[in-house]
Each structure stands twice: as structure tokens, then as C-alpha cells.
Length: 231
Image 1 (tube, one colour):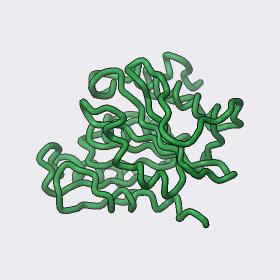
Image 2 (cartoon, rainbow, N blue to C red):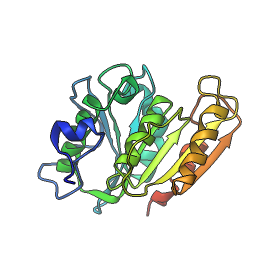
Image 3 (spheres, rainbow, N blue to C red):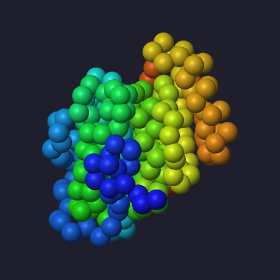
């Protein structure tokens, strides 16, 4: 069966953008606004970029959040490790599939990823989809459907996954606070992770003493696959 394209791909939760040879001049270091249908996406370009292709981490915000409010979770590590950090904006207060089905947010993310791949050389082996809370649930759901693009999924305090066909076998990192009052660990990650393991995914699962949050040490642990920057 042929892979869906265009609007049909978006309705199936499939992304078509892929890293390739950039055709445009790259954006400068710092924060850059990239327009989207729900508001501006935010792209952080690290201050020092190597000549080799860059890693890209996509971070999906939680319910009701704005990209700029999520920047602090990964900003320091993006600068330290030298990766592009994309913070997309959902069309509504949370992500499309949580509101009923894939569609506009998949299309919006696909468009902004295509733009980034036109601007920067991106290492296809180091593209990861991450998120917090609703964003973590969406990252797991969308990332497993697009395992050829996202080689890793980083889910900080997810609530659930939406069942559906997967592709590829991305490695998965999950962290969750044992005292989370918003998405209790017993009905969330302690259910999600065993399911992922049964399906054959490689999972690095970490529980920590705390609530609905993303501790800095969990972020650092999730990014070890990037290695340390060279002097």
C-alpha cells in the first residue's frame, strides 16, 4: 500500500519532511520565530554550531502552554550540546489527536520541519521528538508512527498513548515523578512503559521523587545519546 501524502498523511499522523541538502541560508544564532497557523513556532539555534550536520530536538508543550514558556526545559542543554531546538505551537490549547484526531497540528509540524531542513544540515540519526505532559503523550503517539524520522522519543511525564500502527523502532526515554498529582504515575507511565516493552521498544524508564515537572537531571539523562561537545 502506498504511503499517504498531503492532507491524507496528516489525517493518519504521518510526517513527510526529511533531512536533506539545505537550499536556503541558515538563520542566525538565538531565538527565531517561524510562523504557523496556531501562532509562532520557536526555533533556538545554538550560539556555536559545528560544520557537521546538527542534531534536532523537537519539544512539544503541555496543555495550555506556549512555546516560549517551554524553552527553559531544554535551552541550557541545547546551548551546551549544540543542537537545534524546535518548539512548535499547537493550533488549539493542546494537540489535535487529544482533541479528537490527527490533522492540523501534524500538517503544521510537517511544514515547519520542511522549512528547517531547507535551512540547516540536520543529522538524520539524531532527530528526536520530545514533550512534557500532553506534549509527552503526543510525542509518544506521533513519534511511534514516524520512527523513520524520529530515532528517539523523549517523554517527560506522559499521560497516555493513542493506539495505532508504528513504523521503525525509535528508542524511548520516559521519566515521571512518583508524586505527580496531575498525571498520576500508577495510571500513566507505569501502564505506558510495560506496553512499550511488550511491543518491542527499547525503553529507558526513570522514576524520580517529585511532582508534575521536568527536573534538569532527567533532561540531561535523556540527551546522553548526543554525546559531549568537542572542544
